[in-house]
Image 1 (cartoon, rainbow, N blue to C red):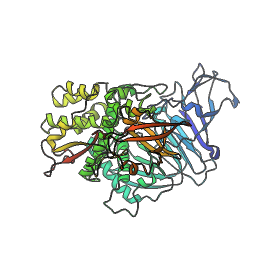
Image 2: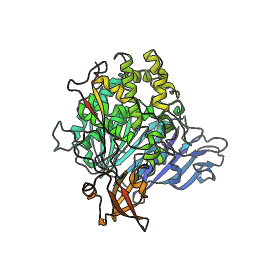
Image 3: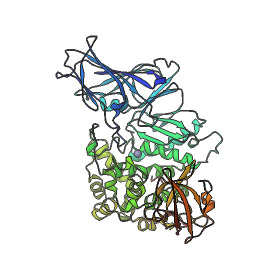
Image 4: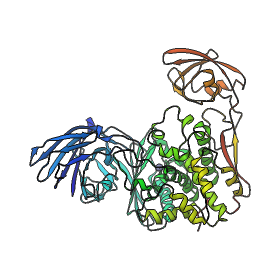
Length: 595
Ligand code: ZN
């Protein structure tokens, strides 16, 4: 048994105090290591760098230690129990981090709780003390050994990997609960908000029930906790075995003033996020790539399969919303059109395959710079489209007899329930087994090539048409038919800047780059008139493709002047339309729950 204890000891200084006690240290001297990354987020974060004090004790006396590498402390050999004490700085608000101030505490295990090396398989207890924060509540999915509901106390985990899979929220928060397929679910919302908690329970219950029934009862978890931290403009989520940490913008939550059947676009985003993380309870937390079973948390672990774990999950997140009638078919097709637009707007999709995107997630997708749209493709967005293509392909080839749902159930029974990892080419072989024929060419096309996915061909038998048009303006996300004329094209994405308009991204083949502008430049005048981000579309609407535009901009602190030859926007914005007769063909129940 490894005993952990954590206290929000100095909230104003953002410091957690952590004690770890090992009864039977390793004979060569007990070592303690922090993970370099947190499961679900594929980037080296080196959590050990937040340790600001470290000390060790044996028999009540300070005990010597040395540092072996960036994340490992080795104690001198000792006969009998050893304890370490550390202070960890916590000021990362993200769902992957740890945070502490005098209003709120939050942590993920990998940020503050080191493993006792050689004892990773042993059961652990975690005592969470309230310190000076006497009025705080506490929420976590970890199994409680002592203390009241939402109180501080002692918790238990089966082993180290289990211990670090339960984020902990502390502070004052709202909570509500519901039951889905007889599994108790909690909703925790921290940060100031006015959310309609009853509405949240009603809507999330539909999502949870649908996904549990999709994979088949019983659900793999005994309880589930949705933990959301609300800020002005946050967005993010991280999946865990029986909980999820989410961040959202205040406006994303349903308000008491919203009409009962109204799902604002921002609330649709939040529901999609909840749906996404819940789907991960099966697809990545239990059905896992072979290389993550178990994953080496001390260094990068590469897999070509993230397209399946993030892409298929991204496909089902919004699909769940339409299948449970939380959003309309039209609303769903709009979201799909936006995803298609996201993938095909940049040149990156011509340069990186889906499997390359997965493999290089650590250094490319997670370390994006301003050139990302020209250089990489998202395994989330293109992965979701590959999942759509696979679903429609299965329906088409089997005359509607089998679908991606069947493949997910097969993955669940072979790899989820058993804990046997999915081999790198495992999705293809199970799909072929399901269908009873080779899908070699199809998988080669969607995963290992940069050719466009055959979406037009696959959607057409359903009566769904994939339409393309020009972007109307620099922030056109697609998904809808054109509303008006397209503005002349510069090939840049812009944002506000105190001096004018910041070029956030520049299309490598666009007119702005051809004229010598680049990402990071701040445009201050167009044809000798001052310009701001809010005026941008209005100013451009006075020009036509073929016009020449004099641009003044700052690059760092140096003024530059270029002339941009405005072009017609390329037709890279997608939207979907359905025949009046609705969905047809063998896949016509695609957006409905199959009974
Ligand atoms: Zn995800």
